[in-house]
Length: 144
Image (cartoon, rainbow, N blue to C red):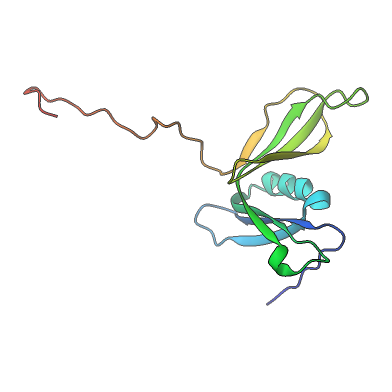
């Protein structure tokens, strides 16, 4: 079975690799960044899907494909709130961080209360530089 997806209007596409569980076969979705990224991420999260890979494809519709760029994402964070403007004092956002460290965000909706949000990609907890290191143990003879 094959499918063809046509993106009209937007030049940025969010590419997501996701699965129901860590060992399940992953699927790939491509959504227009401006109009569908936040909705898709919220739906995947609500359905219990795990995002296993993500990138933003900047594909200018009137440019040669050699001018397109693919930016792998290192983190996706959804639902964090911040002040927006006088009419919308509290808005929730989706924040994206590229592998190169560039951050950008997009509003998801009006929020009722402050929230730190949730990191949905990568799905494993961030480890500090000291995480995973064990101190050597010293036996009774003083040998480690």
